[in-house]
Length: 181
Ligand SMILES: NC(=O)c1ccc[n+]([C@@H]2O[C@H](COP(=O)([O-])OP(=O)(O)OC[C@H]3O[C@@H](n4cnc5c(N)ncnc54)[C@H](OP(=O)(O)O)[C@@H]3O)[C@@H](O)[C@H]2O)c1
Image (cartoon, rainbow, N blue to C red; front, top):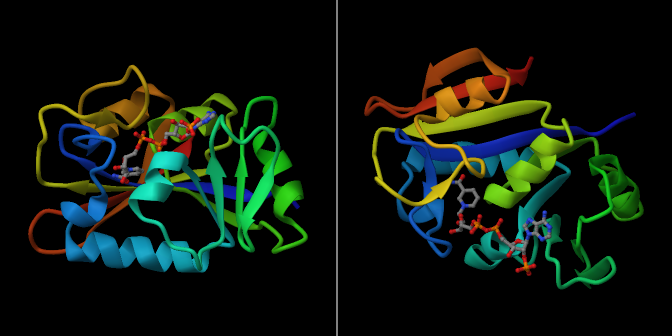
């Protein structure tokens, strides 16, 4: 069966995922978002992330696929952490590479921007779990390259539709689920 890829992301109301490459969500997102994030990561078979996001929140115990152009060939750098350059690969190839360690049924795409771009270009974001925090940065790393504005508008522009929404707290943090098409 094909793996399901869910993009799990928290964005500001003006569409940024970080102020700078070392700015982790733990530094600015709400406790309720962090709890939701950890539960979703725990429930997934694999997390897929770029080198900087991995380094900003190193967790040796997690099952991770880390994208890095410097990984010339897929390399297990820890028992459950595979580094690779995704150039020339497709999302479903990732499942085949990690299957001996743990079959990939559900995977979470954990960013950053270029990782979001890679899955979107491949048409393999099956679901977006977007948390919108009621804060603005004014500048920073966007949800997708070349896109600006509120995150829900960005996703709509890229062809995703909002399917469900619920508050995560009483302070304006919202979890919105988007589906393709
Ligand atoms: N708000 C959120 O939900 C959220 C989500 C994710 C990240 N973040 C934050 O955003 C920051 C990092 O994001 P970022 O966008 O700067 O970096 P990133 O995507 O985490 O890492 C970028 C690096 O990953 C590798 N990479 C990514 N895509 C690749 C591709 N298609 N092909 C080859 N290599 C690829 C490259 O590594 P090499 O340089 O080794 O080639 C690239 O320099 C961190 O602060 C993180 O905490 C926030």
